Length: 113
Length: 115
Image (cartoon, rainbow over all chains, first blue to last red; front, top):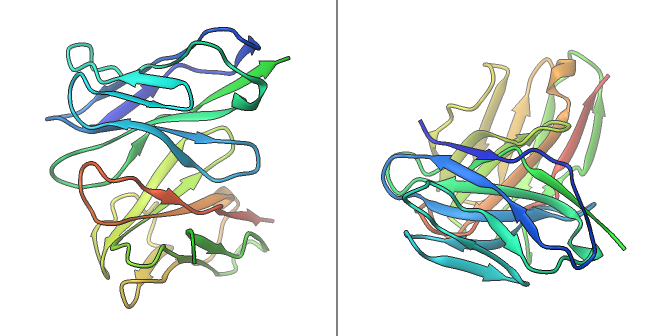
């Protein structure tokens, strides 16, 4: 079946540190991949997405590359800010069959000033 | 409205009571999703609608849970005879259409507490 595995948190970094949050997936075919972010007290919102192999999604300094060969979609940012503190969810949606978003368990990021 | 609206934002109910949670999707969005987020857990899929029909309701935990959507718009998730394990944040999302690459827009959720 389809599934998403994320690195467990919490991840605690100092401001301006480099961030990587690992995400791997299991799916048939070529799913679309997403990163959603949930800031404290807010709803989930899309951070970035990639719909085919080797695509790179980017937004707000965050990037993730769709790697078919390693079934991965790791989230990276070169220099985090305190305002990036949030919970990050990796997700996929299949391109056939049932069109439901499948989420990872989320990774909490805390950035210290 | 501008976004997905859910009501109530908070609900405290006694064990054994029935509750109804409402979701108003973004106007024109044909796809609507319900998820559950328990403390420290990820998002658990419950059901999704394409228009008024539900192609996949495999995530509903038991027959105490049901959902409907009318007029291709508002959806209601009903939990009968609530149990303490039903306590969670219930999230609704909508997207323009059901497909493999469209963004889902989420509401703020309804926090349900069963006492």
